[in-house]
Length: 400
Image: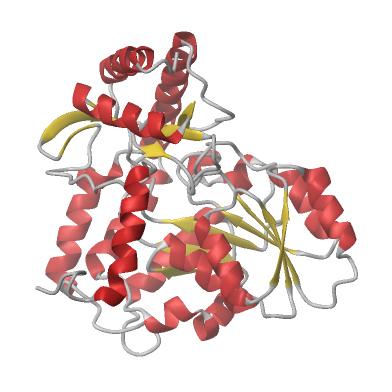
């Protein structure tokens, strides 16, 4: 086995890791033993799981399990190729048509991840002569896509339509294409974009309007149709990005929009062109998830999700915790100091609650927090117990 000591040209990695440890920014991956559930076993310890994006509990839903098993038996375990060669299966097209209907758009294309969907789309549709106007708290995949496109990037203050207008006014004579882009729900703070105002600005200044709906699909809008439905902006957003790995419970991402947009991404989006397509089991699982979501059963799950979310937020606020600007199941517990946030998470885990800490550079300096996510399948007793433990540890650390 080759070590860093034997390969001195990589010693800077060791130094960087030691610096992370000294600054309390180093972590080890927690290992899930068993199913992704509200009560789960990580690193051999049973804990109340407040760290999963499994909003509706679909990772273990019987209908999705059956769909995956049936598809594997019928079609095998892999597609065997990229989509542009021999890897496009009928099921891939059926899933994309299903998502397009659900999102009320002309067409859809599925990517291997939500990150690939964002990065691949922005870098495909823009070039170095173009301009991106981006919310300052947009997801890393949006930021990377913008950088890959080589377009000029202008950032506006978070959810500040007046500052967005200022940027647009300053660049109104821009000769190239302009893309106005925002998350639908912001993953670190759990707040919702002021989408209607941004759509108005996009129309006024002739911008392509793009929304990353990763944390709102399956959560907001009629039967989980997302931020666009929630804000009443159907027909006003040119590009919608979503994920299949959060509320949908599986893996992958997708882009929705016009038929021309999707056909163009088939030709130019590099993750689509150079990555093997989803295996039959994943595709069938996602089909089953959207079928469930667009039904009374899905509606019931979303209502449970929101009932649990409101219950847990009330408990935390009553205990004196600062939950920031959250409007969704993503509920931060603001701590401030990074070292204390990571100690908070560590002590919680020891007491039986898994709530991950976030510090710089994931969030700005001085705004470290725990990020908790409540799901539809948490029991009230579990949330009561979690709140009790959070209060106990928070008091010990002086957070409240």
